[in-house]
Image 1: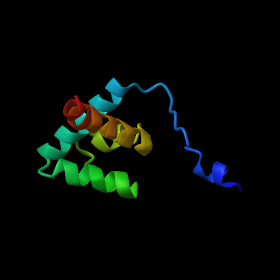
Image 2: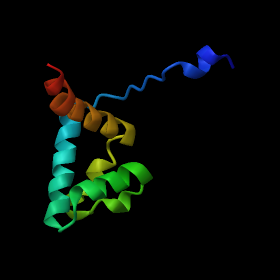
Image 3: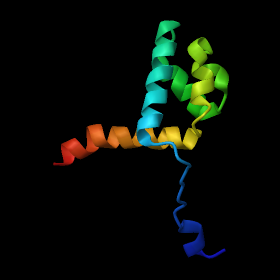
Image 4: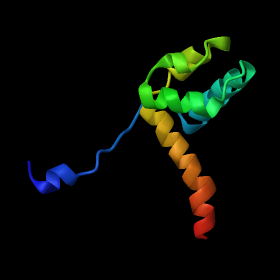
Length: 92
């Protein structure tokens, strides 16, 4: 494999789920975790890093909801939101 082939950037594209749909699922899961007394950020990070759905409460079918979205797509949406909120506003 050549250096050029190894350094090529992979492009990820997923189905029909929109950014708005991902945001709604994250909001729903976040609220369910809060309702159960968990730290939503810690639990979502645990899920994203491990892939273990038990980091997400089953309360209100939150676990079922988050599993409808590929973890890479969740990460992509979170990074995009961070860039939009923190990096693009400071670069202006």
